[in-house]
Length: 272
Ligand code: SF4
Image 1 (cartoon, rainbow, N blue to C red):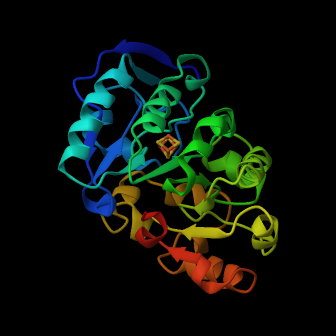
Image 2 (cartoon, helix red, strand yellow):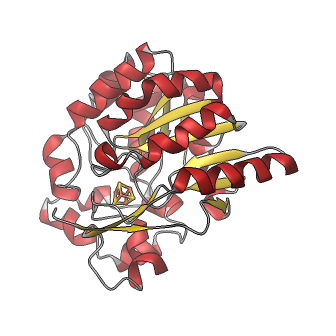
Image 3 (tube, helix red, strand yellow):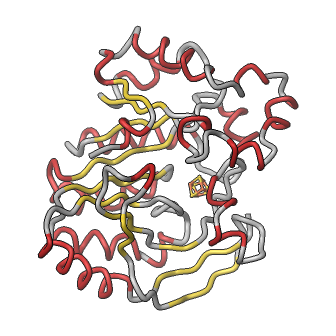
């Protein structure tokens, strides 16, 4: 999707971890807006999107000078205690613009010097591979969590046409794993998938996180309902996947292939 880009100097970078992210002391967003523009993105319903008055996915703000602001805040936060960071909660830190702007990379450079107690990198982009050199320096203080909501390419294209292919994400997870960086596949939100999905992830990650709209959108599924997502399922004749218990089908499939303790559900799957 074409998008407009603006450069803005942020007043702050670290936000308090609240609600779904209450297991974290902070969240960190290198950008505002996200050009992946996923149909189900819950940020569409949040003030940052509503007050912008532009379609979600059509704008991105680059937080210029983010590393300097972040460094100050990280030092201050560390002087008060443990620091656990979720990057990112309302943007993708490796969306396409990051290839040129390197804001996320600049934040990782700070974290290599001033290491937080834990960092979760949440992305759906193969660009994360570029930063393997920095991520390895964080040892077991980091986990890369790659969103892979389905193993079916037509389903991905239907719900999130602006995002990287499933194949590219699987290849990326393999690179991350082979570099010795802790990684997980995050099936969130659960989209219709095949019975073979667990096999495709078996030698790629040890850990799986499964979440859906009803547990994970912060409003019991109401935000997602307001987005009118049901129609996307109806168009495919797959309305049975838009149900509060649909995720159990995926869990069942995965616990036949992965040790059950490696298959985490909803908030538990994202925790440090
Ligand atoms: S990648 Fe994440 S933040 Fe970006 S549009 Fe998709 S769900 Fe929203």
